[in-house]
Length: 199
Image 1 (cartoon, rainbow, N blue to C red):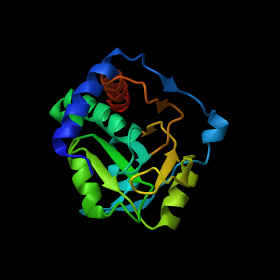
Image 2 (cartoon, one colour):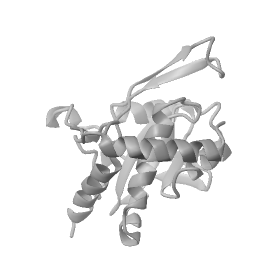
Image 3 (cartoon, one colour):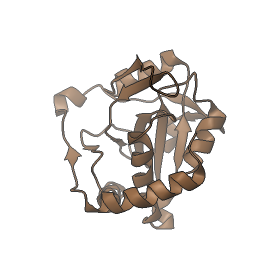
Image 4 (cartoon, rainbow, N blue to C red):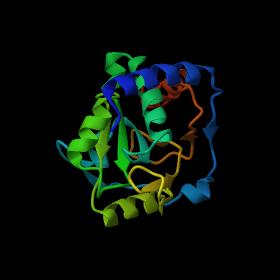
């Protein structure tokens, strides 16, 4: 587990790098392919069960990963944290990130709470039984695979989808996805456009 100081330093570096990145919003799946995807689910957080349905009226960003991820997960959560820090208080009340752990055996609820707490209060770690996780990933078109790697400190790595999924205020999965190279500033602009949809 990385120290808070290390993560803070990493976040500062990555925010600077992200600010230079070109915004890339993927429309990699067609309207036909998105049809039938998504839907409500209930996963477990440190504070109890969380259902997607309880976030109606909010924009929900969903990112799938695991706390032992060596690079893309802390990078992505750092950029999201930076984006959230740029939102107004009333906007923050209407946007949440769900960090869905693909490693429920290792990622306990306590560990997820501590890990996401390093980044931002609006980033909530959730997980569940592997069967539930697999159903959610199937419903949302997320792919992942666990590989044994002798050189890894934990003996394995999990290759997983890198995009951030976006759920609108009606609970619908959007076909646009936030790519890893997207800057915090562009995420803020995108989230604000989604929040304005029902204004």
